[in-house]
Each structure stands twice: as structure tokens, then as C-alpha cells.
Length: 343
Length: 271
Image (cartoon, rainbow over all chains, first blue to last red; front, side, top):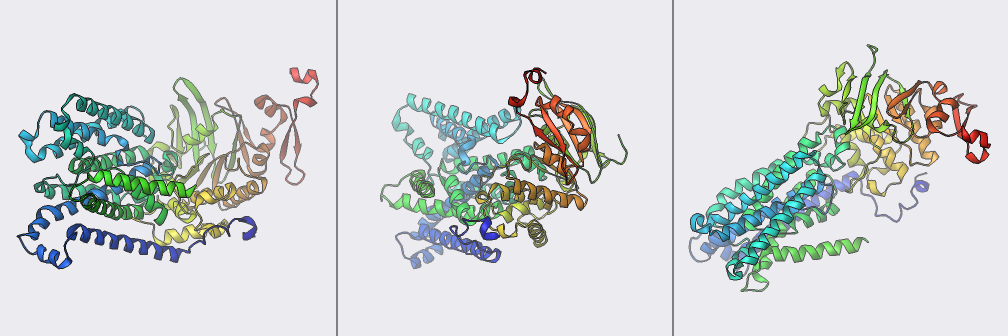
């Protein structure tokens, strides 16, 4: 009877049993962790051998200073930002029910870009110094979060209105950014442009102690929403019938992901494709349930950004590329490969 | 309103903007009934189901479930009493059958990260009962329509509800799967489940429902056992189609045969 019912079952991949699948998932997590550790070692040690790095960890001179002032802070930020973009991507793909949504879909990047551009125009660095970009970037992100939130509240707060107002806000803000760019001397805007393409090198290291808890807290809270994300991904109506309160859940998740994305953008500019490609690839490997997808995407996002950062530093050495350009090229190619392979 | 009714709908009206979708609906549902909601397209059947499920709130009137107003239940506790299958469900992500069905335990399982062993056991028990155990690790998107409908139903059953609300559960299925799904529902009814379902096929409704509610333009037209609801007078008036009603020789339930206009005389057509 089984054979008659499923004439195509032989053509499909053999179905793993529950025990096999569990082992497979553990194996994937182990692999991800190993890749992550390797990328961290590579990011810290590139061009040096491991004993120099180990010695450097305990020294305050020479390479020890390079490690402390440049390589460790940069690796820490790449880890946190990559992981955060990964979990934000998972969350938004689930609530918007679209496997191609990403953290910037809801307009946060537009607001942040405007904040940074305005900061350059009015020369905020004269007042705020190294804090100008992070503060103004986050302020801009907050403005766009508030705009999108209030506009969505006017209708019922649902995925469609979030996407609609997110895209509108994004377009308006980035048009204003281009307008300002067109008025100003291009040389003056060079730094701003670099930042807009994603830049892990410029953040002042005195800010890192603030960013670590701020970036970790929302991500940890998101890990607890795995089951709700599963149910929300079935659509608002069905989610309602399974015991979730969709409008409330949408609001909480919108605020968590937007603030987290805003913090990422304020620290390192607009790093594209991480939040899109990482959940997309991992969902195909590890399956759709969101709790494990969130954890895997944190590890995967961290790995992807750290390794991209290594490439951005050494691909055209000594010229350093904006890391957003590298993630964009890699991510785009991976996505292209996946999409063409499926059809 | 009867005191012992499981579900009491009293004077319920609902509007979308200026358009009245439901007007002064009164319906009492006893425990263990299987009610078929029938009526022409756009009559307000799905809206009625969504009101009973708590997804929409009535503009006027009240809905009382198990002695308390529906609006006093929080989402999670209502999901432990009422399971609802909407007309369409689309799945943007590749869940397996097992992963999908266990989500029905969400209203019960307080754990944060994943479902516990007992919840998973319950889900696989119900899959076995419904003869879909062999599908457990298949992706839902690879299933046939009939298999998928059983999987959707299994998730509702895993919710362990007292009331099951179904919006056209068999509309896209072939007769074999229509019968299998409705037989499963019959079995669940035997275990004490109360079922309200919207059906388009009048004959299937007649066979499987103990009571039929015919809704026309937002109001209840008739409400009673199949033999009283499915009369040719009612059907011809409501659906504007000539029909012949006969009795199923085995079940003694009425069955309806629509008659094409080409067999009618000019006189009949003008009526």
C-alpha cells in the first residue's frame, strides 16, 4: 500500500530516521563550531604563526599590541555583528514568511545611513569625536524604527504593513542620503561612503565594552522565541489558532530585531547579505524549526562575517576592502548558486 | 440560550466596514454534535467560523464557550479547547510532517527551546492512529493534497481540543481522500469531539453531519437534521438551481442531484 501511495518515493533522498536526524544535527553544530574557531584563529593570526599569537596574547608590546588594539576587537565585533545579523535574518524571514527577507528589509539601514550622512555634514565628529558615527547611526536607526512602527500601528500591525512601510521608509531615507551626497564635495564623503559599505575597522575600541552586552542581550532574548517563530511562520491566522497572539508577538519581534540591527549598523555600517544568506543556507541543511535555526545562524553568521573580514583585509593587501563588499560578492554568488541549482 | 450548550452564539452580527457580513446569528452547539455549515459563496460561513474561533470579534451579540465569554479566554487556553483549520495554509519553509504536527502541542508545553519527549510521543501516536506514521520525516511540501490535509488535521487533533472547526476540509480532495478524512472525523466524533465544518458538497454534509445549518446572506436560513434542511424547496430557493432530492438507499440520508438548465422547459426556467 505504501508503495502504491507514493510512486515517487524511490526517487527522493532516503528519509533519515529520527535518531539519524538527531545525530546529523549534532554533527552540523560541531562542524559550525569548528569552522567558527578556525575563522577566529585565522582572523587573529593571519601572516603570523600560532606561537607568535600565543605569545602576543600575554604581551603588551609589538604583536601583542596589534592583537589587543586591532585584531581582537575587530574579531569580537565581527563575531557579534555577524551572529546578530544571522538571528535577525531568521526572525524576519519567519514573521514575514519570506525566505529572502533580511535585517534591512524593515528600513533600519536607511535611517542609520541618514544619521551618519547628517553627522558628516554637520561635522558631529568635532563634538562627539569617535562616538559620532555610532551615536548618530543608532539615532537614525531609531528614527526609522519609530516611523515604521507608528505607521504600522495605524493599520493592523501585520507583516504586510511592516514590509510596506519598511520599504517606503528605506527608499525615502536613502534618497535623502543621495540628495545630500550630490550636494557635497565627494572627497569629504569618502569616509562616509566606506562606512555605508560596511566597515569593521573604524569602530573606536573604547566603545566595544558597551557594544558587547548591547549586542548580546537582544540576541539571547530572540533565542527564546524559536517555538513562536515556528508557529508565526504558518501565518497570522493559523498562529492565532495555535495559541500565539500574533500582533503582540510581531511588535516584540519587530522591536528586538530592529534595535539589534540598528546597533549592528551603528557599529559597523551596512553589511549586506549576512542576514539573508546565512539563514537561507542553514535552513536547507539543518531544517526549518526555528530554535535550532536561530542557534545555528548565530554561529554561521559569526563565521561568515569573520572569514569575510579576513578576506577584506588580505584579498588586495595592502588595500583594505569594505567588508560589506566582500559579504555582498560572496553572499550573492552563494545565493545564485543555490537558486540555479534548485531549478 | 440553552444552559447546557457547549457553545452559545447569541444575536451575533459582524460588519466589514459598511458591509454587514453576518446579521443576528443565534446558534447553540451541544457537546458531541457534528454540524455542517452550508450555504452559497459569500454567505458569511467562514466569517462565522472565525468568530467562533476567536480570530474575529463580533460587533454585536455574544459568544459563550463552556460558560465563559469567548473574549475572556487568552489565546493559549482557548487553543487547548478549540482547534481550527483555516481554508488554506501555505508553508514557506520546509518543515517535516513530524515537526509540523508537534507544533499542535504549543498551547501545553511551557518549555522554551523544544518540545518534550511526551509531546513528541503523543504526536507520533496520533500519526499512527491516522495512518500517516510513514510520512513522519517527509517534507510537507512534497506531500499530495490528500496527505497534506490529513497532516493538517493531525496537528489540530494533537491540540487535544473539545471543539474542532474546519473550513472546507475536503474541498480539493478526490472522493477516496474525501471519504478517508471524513471517516477520521467520524471516528473522532465517536470519541466525543464536537465538530463544526463548512462543506460545499451537500451530499457529503448530509452523510456525515447530524445537523446542518444553512446560511444565506449573513443569516441562518434553516437549522436542523439533514432531512429537514436538504429539501428541494430550500436548496432551489437558496442556490437558485433546480435540484432533485432523493434518499440514499443505505444511509437513508437525503442526497441532492443538481439539474442542468438544458433539461428544463421554458416554463420552469422562468420561475
